[in-house]
Image: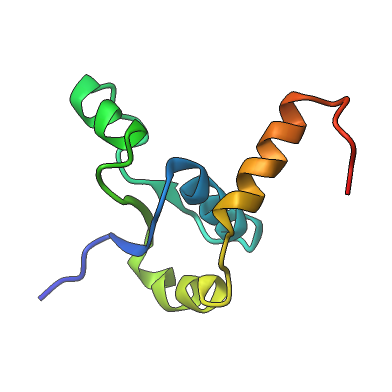
Length: 96
């Protein structure tokens, strides 16, 4: 039986978190992308924006174990991510 070309390494809680996972993987040389990133389907897009489904991060099956090891210790605090995003929008906000 043949293996799939791509496998889900992690399901993110939000599109932003998925992008962070993809960036971490790509920085380590592992090709990664968000499932359905290229879709223009309004239904899929609206469900993702409302976060009704988890956002799947895909990597080549051959890199799956290495990608899992890399993401295992990664926990992204949603509140911290939101704080950073708000600071990025308002450069005048005080830094901690």
